[in-house]
Amino acid sequence: MVTIILLLSCDFWAVKNVTGRLMVGLRWWNHIDEDGKSHWVFESRKESSQENKTVSEAESRIFWLGLIACPVLWVIFAFSALFSFRVKWLAVVIMGVVLQGANLYGYIRCKVGSRKNLTSMATSYFGKQFLRQNTGDDQTS
Image (cartoon, rainbow, N blue to C red):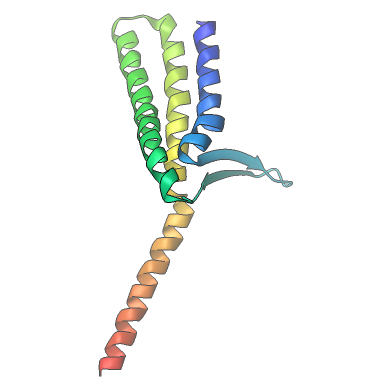
């Protein structure tokens, strides 16, 4: 049980700090400022060349497939442990769900962007469209 939890922790660290950065160019972490406030940082790198894109596309698919399949597998294990009344294994399974789910959530936030950025982008886009329509109607009249 302890060995599995240690291996899960190592997998969480490797996927979060190494694999995600190298395979898909995404990384996330928590930063605490001088005031003691916690700030989550989600980053993604820009694609630089066409050659790099073909290699990273296959790697990206493998990464996302593994990132999505692992939490699903741990949820199946959770239901299996719950319905077979193996409560002692439920702690390990919950750790697996939490760690794999945290990585999945973090990388989805990196890929899509933070909610604050999405809100400001949507507001900016709709504001530009509104202005474009209004200025376009004024120019034709």
